[in-house]
Each structure stands twice: as structure tokens, then as C-alpha cells.
Image 1 (cartoon, rainbow, N blue to C red):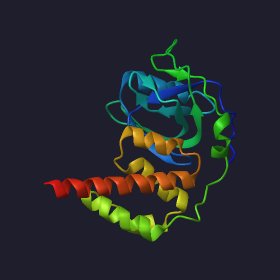
Image 2 (tube, one colour):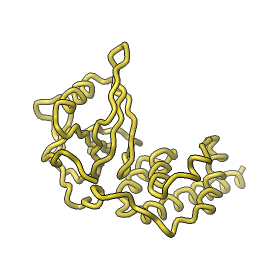
Image 3 (spheres, rainbow, N blue to C red):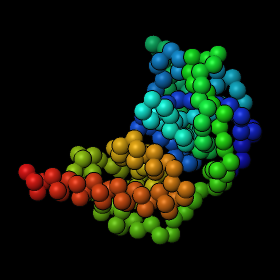
Amino acid sequence: MTFRFDLPNRIALFPLAGAVLMPRSRLPLHIFEPRYLQMVEDVLKTDHRLIGMIQPEGENLAAIGNAGRIVAYSETDDGRLMISLKAVSRFRQSDAEQGFTPYLTTEPDWTPFQRDMSGSEHDPALDRPKLFHLLERYMKSHDLSTDWGAAADAEDELLINSLSMMLPFSPGDKQALLESPTLADRRELLFGLVEFALRSGDSEETMQ
């Protein structure tokens, strides 16, 4: 994966609980707060067009986020923005601050996540029949639906990362999925979270 820009030494941050951007994935966002409208306007003037997606943790921010490049942009009649971010690289932050802008910025450390800039990962150990069996039970228990045809055709990375972003896990669980070093690690954690949710649901039904 190559880009026509250098990774910057400072990026804008968009803290949003429950919203994580997995490596090489895309995330649609609806922007309406004035400070973040300003953020998008400022970011679009840069060569890199990167926004750091990061989750709040109490009164602070998570240590690790993922920077996405604005690859789609549209404006509604009432001035709101619809954008889409394409993941470029995760980063570690420790100095988020609000300076001359109404939004937070940070000096990201890109070095732990150089693999993010490479091609897609594959997971030969992925047991798709088991995953789809678990997902079917999970979706039913949470009154959710999915496009099973698209899921069956998806490559390993797209499937695991999409599920990690879309399933209604807690912010902490989503953060753990984001921080998983490899696709195989993320898949193992995803299986564990789904299985735990199913066991918890079975226990609740037994107690009623």
C-alpha cells in the first residue's frame, strides 16, 4: 500500500465512543458539530487529509487510534457533512491537546504499526462454518440481520474487520479488537466475544 503523502507529525482527533476504524477498512461519518465541521474543512486543506479516530476513556482518550484519509465528501442542504474515511495506519497518542483549533490534535507515534501500511492480511486458520454458525445465533439473539451472501464472499480481513466494527460490542471490547496486533489475534478475540455474549444470553434465559 503506497500513498502520495508522508505521514504527518500532527493530526486532528475525532473522539467518538463505540466507533473504531480497523486497518484497511472504511468508516462513514456524519459530521454536524461546529468544531468538527471546522476540523474537516481544515483537514481537507492538507495533503494527507487524515483524521485520527479515537475513543474516549473516562475523562481521557484511548492510547491507540487509527488515522483515516477522507476519501468521500458530501454536504447536505442544512450544512452537515457526510464523509468516508479509509484507514491508513493506527497510531499511539499521549499528548492530545487543544491549541489554536476548536478540536483536539496529537503528535502520533506511527512506529508500532508499520504493518498497517502493507497489503491485506490473510487468516488461514479462520473457521468460516463455525463463525457463521455463531453469527447466526448472535444475530438472532440481538434481533440483527446481515447479508449472508456478501459475508460468504468477503475476504478474511474484510469479514473480520467489518464484524469488529459493526457488531454491538462495548467500547472497551471494540478498543481491544482495534489493538489486536494481527488479523488472527482479532479473529480469536472476535470469536471469544461472540461466544461470551451467547453464553451470557443463555444464562439469562435459564434464570428467568
